[in-house]
Length: 135
Image (cartoon, rainbow, N blue to C red):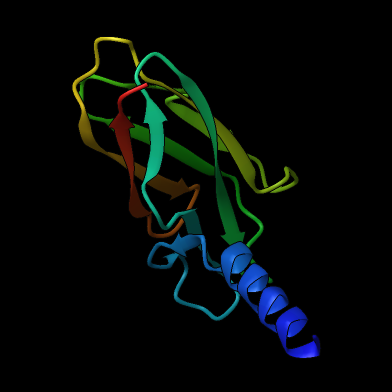
């Protein structure tokens, strides 16, 4: 029984911490003065005609105290709101996106790109996929 519980706990931790991937570092090359953008690792399945929320997070280095502008882009066929947001240095690092898939959207995979630009330093970007499926 202990082994079963341990396996379940381990799988739960892998699921929670393994569901997001991070971008390359942006900001400064100095240790602690950088940031990354965490996005879902796996495809986000959304049915035609539905709306779903997705969380994108800013992972700040311990000394990174800048505002970062996040910009979101995708191919035509689905929509994202907001298309850009300023994450202030004092704000929580999580941004909620609303992804809308129209009823007439073509089935398939749509790539969503996320670019983070700090006030000073280097920008960084990453991507995740939205898979449109039948209802």
